[in-house]
Image 1 (cartoon, rainbow over the protein chains, first blue to last red):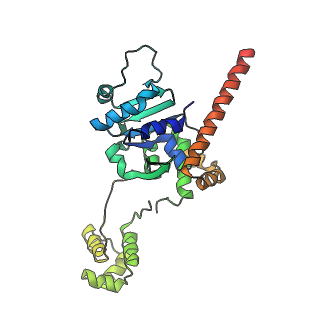
Image 2: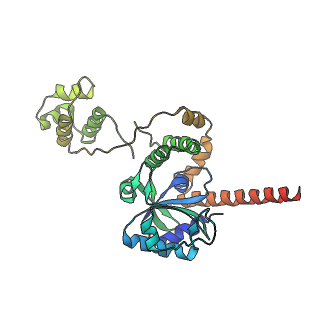
Image 3: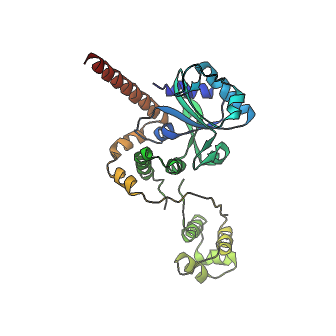
Length: 162
Length: 124
């Protein structure tokens, strides 16, 4: 089971630059749906790659679904060589996305975030409009019900477009 | 963020926020009241230059961004009819921290239900 608070605290500690997207972002916006992992878009600068590595190292990250024993090294070099990582850790599952379908990279998403205080720390969360747009762009049938709920939330919060 | 998608409404919003009458705005922009009125009434289709000039006269500038077009999806609309909005309203009354705590509690419950299901299957 994913320990959301612990994973977010791990990212906060070395001040990783990231944006919460996906199901946890939906929860922050008021969704009542259960999500299994923390989904974030992270900045790909060298300094931030180093922060990501330091943040998650104590949680022993490993490739989710991969057989144990693969030569997987949790390092800046590994992050630099890849882009999106679906990981499992001792605090649960986390998806690290260097790029988000329909949304782009961290710098593209940055202006479409809200600043939320989560467990005492300022945290960037993708705004409702862009959360819906990225879920639509992903085109996954399982997201359709989530999109319906997010659009209902947009209506409830008065963020519906004119 | 509240977005006004049509230039006509954008102009009207800018003029009202600047507390200007159509005539006052027109004077500032070097045009006539009837031009402003025709635009606001949707009787004419202004160019981007005209809209920019009028918005500037009201003390605003215009920033454009690309926003993915949101098409109505019949499946999403069907799901929407079944959404329990009272649940959403209750969530919206909570703080973001409390929303995450509720998610954690739900995850704990789901985990426990899965564990119980596995235990029952083992005893069969």
